[in-house]
Image (cartoon, rainbow, N blue to C red):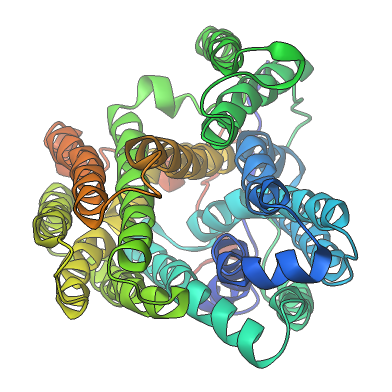
Length: 494
C-alpha cells in the first residue's frame, strides 16, 4: 500500500503572517487556562456556585483539552491542518460566548468543557502549520516567536483576569475572546495555506477509544484526587482504582500504537531518539513551570499575605522573561548546537527554581522572588524553541500533526501531574503555621526542580547534538517529487 503523500502548502503571503494568525488562536487557548482563576470569587458570588463547581470550571477546560490533543493532531494530518484549526477555533469562540451568558454554575461548566474541546482541536495544528510553512533553517526562529506569544498569554493571564473583573465584570473575561477569535478566523482563510495529506488514510476507532478512555482515567484522578482527599468517588469507587484502570487502558493504547505503523502516535516516538527525549523534556519543563507557579501562588498569598492580583504581578515576570528570550534561542540555534542551548537553559531554570525555594520563609521580602523567577523564566524560555525544533527535526511530513499533538499532550500532562504532586505536598496545610506553610512550599519547589534536573540529563543523550541527520522536507516522496513547500513552483523564502 502506498504511503500517503504530503501536499506542499501554497503560500500567497509571507509565512510570518500565517504564524501570527495561528498564534492568535493559540494565544486565547493559553490565556483561558490562567485568566479565569483570579475571577473565581466573583463568579462564585454572582452564580451562587460552591467551591466544587468552581473546581470544575477550571478543570472542565483542562480535561477535554488534554484528551483531544492526540486525536486532533492526527485529524489535522488526515483532514487538513487549516480545516481542523478553523473548526476548533470556531468552537472555542462559540463556547466563549456561552460562558459569558451562563446563569448557573452547571451552564458555565458545560460551556468550559466546550471551550476545552475547541482548544484541544486547534492547538496541535499551530505547531504543524508552523513546521509546514517554514523551511528547516527558519523553524528555530519561528518556534521561538510562537513560544514568545504563548508565554506572553500565560504571563498576562492572572493580571488581566484581575483587572477585567475589577474594572468591568467577570463575563468580559470570556467576551474578549470574541473579537480576537473572529479576527483569527478571517485571517486564517487569508494568510494560512492548506496543508494536508494526499490519498485516503483512515483513523482507526479503537486507538481513539483507548487513548481517550485511558487519558480520562489518569487525568480525572490527577485533577479530582485532591478534592476527595484521594479517597472514593461516586458509588464508593476508590479513586486509585480509576487511576490504575486508566493506566492499564493507556498501556494497551501504547502497545497498539507500537505494533502498528499507522496509529495516532507518530512513529518518531518509538523510532527517533531525539523526538522521544524531547517529548520527555517537554513534560519535565511544564511540570516545573506549573508546579512552581502553584507553590508560589499559595506561599505569596497564605504566608506573605499579598493579594491575588499582586501575586500575579510577582509571578508574571517568570513568563515574561520566557517570552523575551524564546526568539533569541531560536536565532542562536543557527550558531550553537541545540544540545548546549538546552543544557544551558535547563541549568538556569534549575538554578532559579532552587534559589527561589531556598529563599522561601515567613519573613522574605516578595521582591526578591521577582529576581529568582526571572532567572528561572529566562532559562525556561531558552529551551522552548530548541525543544520543539529538535523534536520535529526528523519527523516525516505526513506525521507533523500527530507529532505536534503528542508534544502538546506531554506538556499538558506535565502541568496536570505538577498540580497533583504539588497539591499533595501542600495538602492539609491551610490552617498550618506560617513556618509549616513555608517549609511545605519550599519542598514543593524542590520537587518541581527535580523535573528540570532530569531534563538536563535527558538532553545530554541527544543524537548528533540535536541536529537532524536528514531534513524530512527534502526527502523524496513516492511520486518522485520533493516535499519542500513551494509557491507556484518556487521555494518559499520567508
